[in-house]
Image 1 (cartoon, rainbow, N blue to C red):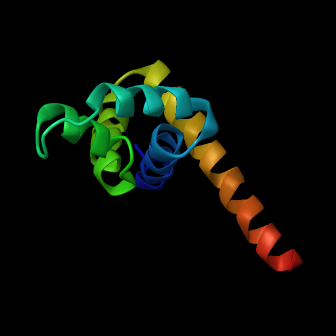
Image 2 (image 1 turned 60 degrees about the vertical axis):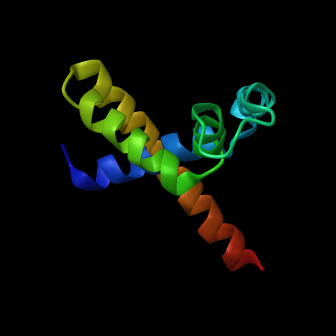
Amino acid sequence: MNPVLVALATKRLTQLAVEDELTRPVREWIDRWAGDAPEFSFRDRVATLTSCSACMSVWMGAGILLAGRCSLGRLAIRVLAASASALAIDAVLERLER
């Protein structure tokens, strides 16, 4: 699997989980579920994971590498990489317009 595709797909899947509006209800549910859990408890760590791109990217990257082992997974990786590329191009164009 092309390492650039893996990196782009990992970036996009991480962004989808941690930042996108689409997954906001899931993150909010996890925050409520974690509540006032003690620091470093399982619930606290799960809540931290859903708000930390660096933390989440490790797990998403592992998932991407596993997905690359089957044809449907490779298709999903290409779709995620294309989405990440499109978002990056949009960001560059937006900066150039300023």
